[in-house]
Length: 337
Image (cartoon, rainbow, N blue to C red; front, side, top):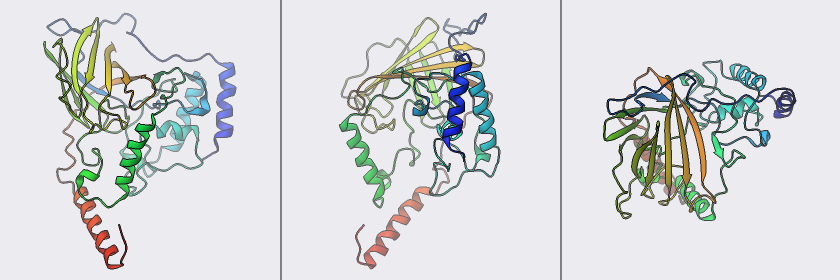
């Protein structure tokens, strides 16, 4: 892979000569959202997050919130060069954007241990001119993490390094339980199906199960009641569905957050095939300040199937069997695990 220096320099040269392309936001001109029988905007359907924009703005782009059309075209062309081979290593999530910016000299899949994916299995990604999903802070990067949050992540990382004593030593994602709420990862089982009735909205996440959200149902449950995906309450503000979620448990899988996580999500259908998803994340135990992001979701005709990866999946059995074998080998050699 080429060095970042010449490519990023080219980006900056282009930036001096072109107008900045703005991302699509707000309802499409001349278009009105369809309505459900109870009069609310119809948000139903399968919506895909295959957007290539990274969560955080790469530092090499500085304060550039968007790219010019020429820069965007150059990135897409380079992505075609890097990822046009079915035999090539798979690029997950934000790594597509990072790879085409050539922030590293080489690229390899996030799944470096087993290499069981290649680009053949990956979905085509959606491009826009933005350089980050994060819209606040304005620098497009997450606020600083607290010392307590870093300690939690360090403890979890240390636990993953030891031989697994049981399934509980492995992550919720590895155990096929949940990938957390909100689910911001793109390009890999990143689909959500929306169902609506007069009193409820259901968000069926391909990797994470269903969130059944009552509308205008009053206050949250008692503070002592904690759930992995929190307690959600929804209401409509004009054409926007607003979901307020609190009461998270400490077992949540979203970026190492605490039980103090507070989420405000906004879903607005802005075109026939586009659903704008905005989220504001507040967790004083994890970050120094609140932050917000926007993900443009695209309508998909593909169905969402049950994510039941333990059905016929022998991975966990292999992990436990391997851990016991390593312990036995170390015991025979007089070592310690």
